[in-house]
Image (cartoon, rainbow over all chains, first blue to last red):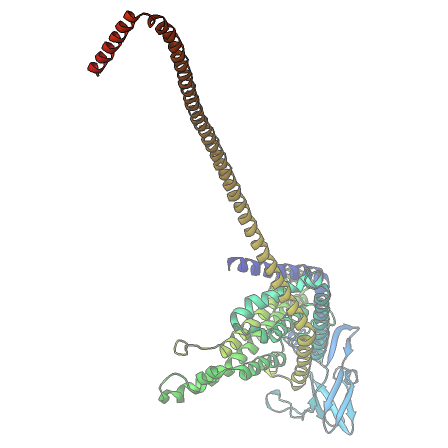
Length: 380
Length: 168
């Protein structure tokens, strides 16, 4: 066992050091792009005359209908993405038609306008009616657009497929010989997840859940890493989006619910307490069942979003002070760059850690639901 | 607030993309990767085990060899000892039998000598007797020509016989 632990620590160390090298390689780009991404929000600056860091950061962390690259001479340069609306029929058009929220799009007699990243049904002038507390009163069509996050998701999935299909091929062709190239980079991670995470948490029938848990791990890990690379087509906040983490935790919840054995369900609906207490305990148990995937969802979302916000926050400092005086901005830049470098390295650790934690907790959760109680009196 | 509300579009695409990714990876990636890993691990384990076994066997063989060598040496020594003893025995026996044979031969020779001696004595006795008879005849022939002498001889002879009888 101590040998195994040594190996796993070494594995983590390898992964981290690889990631650090990778980040150093990206660092030049990172600074250039963060600077650009802060600049691109000239929009905020020009519209209200002042740089609004909160708005800029939130716009970056949130989903968008086009992929903003930078601003050029007062105009946003962005990659248009397909808009898919379902509103009495399917409407598909390019997001460039909105002209970054300045134009109203007409489709089959309906008018659509982009307001703060959301598409609303409007009249032909694109009037947005505001209610109390800035709530928009306009109706929203069902929006299945390929947004920035969907696009990043697809890119990440293609990369994941490329990585794993290519190493699957090398496993097939190389047979029992030692791993090589990409295979030897990924193999320790696969073995780590299998031997240190899934096997001890799920138990002897772990092989059934291994493909799912490995997919979850690599999906989160690779999306986390890609979120840290600031150039197109990376840098989207995919794993920091609640919809993504929601689907991941629902998958875990469904797998647990469909594979939970009778002990698991008995523990929830007929706990080993006097029936008089069932009224109290059953709702608590049900709450626990829902809470576990809910916490999984929230943890991943919060960690990744927080990382993005902190990095962007340090960069905003440069522009906040830069507005006061260029010298203050330049001085702040030194500290901001240093802190962002530190945070980026930390985020690399978090990228791995959060993928690991999600997989570990999902494994434990599956393990507890499928555990075979030979002596049910001993466990509860 | 908007940050924590899942958008329907992204949720929909996430389900589709993740589902597809899951199915494709499970079928085309995890199956071959995990089975290859398992195969390799089991083959490595087997190889290690068989190496260990071979080592054990080798050491066993070595100790067996040593024991065998030792035994062979002991056996050799024993054989040598036995041979030595056997040699001694054979020599001893040969000596003994030679002695006995010699004794027997001596005995036989003595017997033969005695026999020859006896027969020689018997022959000598016969010759002496016939010679004495001849001498006696001649003597008696001379003496018996005189009567007087005849009578004295007879008388002395009878006396001699009488004495002999009395003595007996």
